[in-house]
Image 1 (cartoon, rainbow, N blue to C red):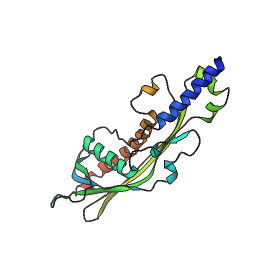
Image 2: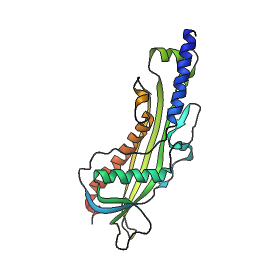
Image 3: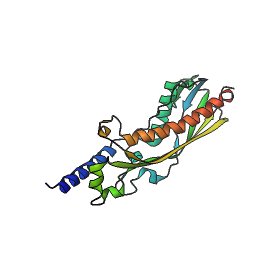
Length: 222
């Protein structure tokens, strides 16, 4: 096989590996640090309303993979689960749980957390220039291949009392658009890197919301 054919074969194999890896199911996950303060209240988290554009869950172009299209479950449910798990682990509230029907009499929360997902998407793309004959193999030969990543998370959470009184509304936003290069360790990572990048944006948005809640601590426990 000629040197050109060998390099083209490597490039095609890399592109195929990208598409296969991008099909790894995405799971929204938070990684907040331990809360500096705990709000002494029990909280029930309701399913969030998904108001994100439908196109956010679609592959919009050739060579582009939508990460929220490959989830194993509903976005609203998975985001709520991630918030419950992380707020519980990091001690944001005295106790927090997902809203469940049929709770025992007398087992009522102090606060109810609900909200809206305005945006939540991630796209991983093979740059179009990488597919140009004579360019892609040269990049593959002399530099690490790259992916284009872009995504955004825009969440709004509302805290109410059991009687319906709104205590506070909090919003967090994060977005990114970047070219991500990788080295020989890239495909051995335990989590597909584009998924990790989207989860970082998710964490940044929720961090903003948590900071707002902690500043409202006195109002939340009245």
